Image (cartoon, rainbow, N blue to C red):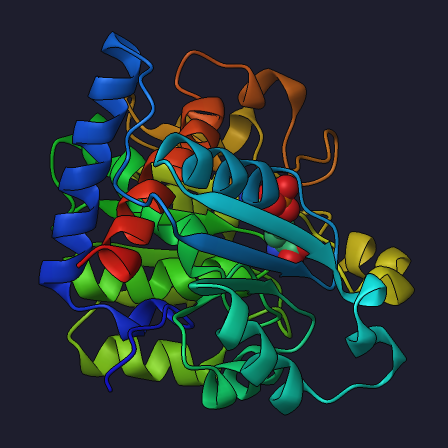
Length: 305
Ligand code: CP
Ligand code: NVA
């Protein structure tokens, strides 16, 4: 039996991404008009497993399942036998007997791939060291809402070329956006992701000069300098990334109507200034809201049809 997973953003086709964004917009409108609980996922249960902390992913998936009429169980890695050494293979088989889909946030991308190998339910990547595809779905939705298109949009990423950046590059490749990354040497996005995106015809530019890269941006995007799991090298990373702050200086280089994006959580005074985060062009909170709508659309795709 074919089971659809979302482990990498590259698991989706352009048509599937477009359909998810369309459905998400419809669900957003419907929720604003009347916050009714749908019954689409009645009888279905999503389990979430967290090896690291989460605010947006956890809460938006929980609310999404409930508002679609389904149920949800959220668990920390260490409260499961996984934390005492039970293998992923057995855990995946057991979860498959109980629930209809599993979302996992893990340190290593291979943990999620391993789980999916043994699961007979859809598996969703809720963030790994390599990718954050659910974030990208909400990001693409947000960009399309503000720019009325995706193809040809110039996205500028400032800072660490991390998991969120990798998935965004994949999303750009899929939808025809151009993506320019300003980062210090050693902080480039994953080579494999960049190569794949370029093979798909995506304009991916990587450089060290943030001011130059930011010129004419339609979207300015940043994320934390120290991702979860990198706390041990926190001081070094903050030093290395010091010049890559999303500040007014960079905003001046971008188009006047450039939107400011951040997947959150924000570290004010590090990767972004308070002024820019709260500026008129910031769509950061809407972007966070869109996690809910985009994931509802994803859940419907994985669980209903
Ligand atoms: N953007 C995001 O995934 O946030 P959380 O870590 O709070 O889930
Ligand atoms: N890059 C960050 C994203 C958090 C949503 C991290 O992995 O911690």
